[in-house]
Length: 283
Image (cartoon, rainbow, N blue to C red; front, top):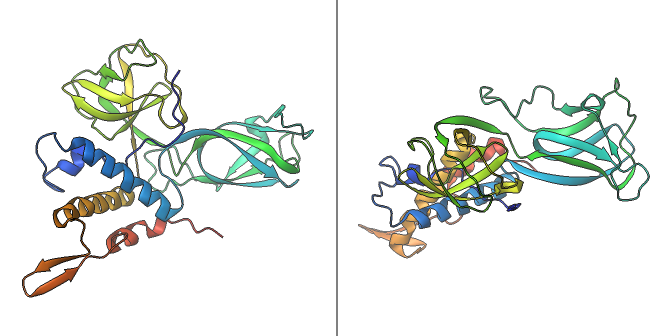
């Protein structure tokens, strides 16, 4: 089965970039270039904020300190927590959900209706559980889950036709309406990244972002991942800016009546302002 563990994602769709409110691009000849541009600028925003906003299913290991607290990267949901209590590189002890607590309280990273959603960044031993501390040693704690700032999705109006193969990269949907090129979608437990569409047929990357490609019954619900609005706006600004710069052969200055105007290199100033509240400072 196909499994992609590297990020396959854009925080904005090709359709949005092509719209009259952004680039006003017609036709489909530039669709692939626009998708790649949106992907690259999404990764730029990840680097500038020192975090990512897509959901990545992955297994990660951490050094235990023999304490009741374990600091972790952004976590949107947890699947399992195990420890290697005898330091044999085998995680033989599975913790029950009643053995630990996720912090901060009320982070709620998986509820779309909560505009204050944020990630979990710490696991605490629950004093009411059966465990006392995280085993001291190198790589003694294993956490499986969806890593990222949050995990917000909404259901598309269309549903998926049957997908009987784990390797097929095209499939049909019922009356495509909401799903667009550049969307990451979730069908059952598989993420699929939409590269393009023609009519009701989608071309996708299967098993995206750590998930495993699987078969799906006809009529399956399609959930579309969404991201914080300031992050989306930052990608729109950067993508539009780079797209327009092609008209000057990516020069650092363009001619205007009365002289030259310098083009700022690097991230746009409005982008820096938009993403500032989301930046994770690394100590």
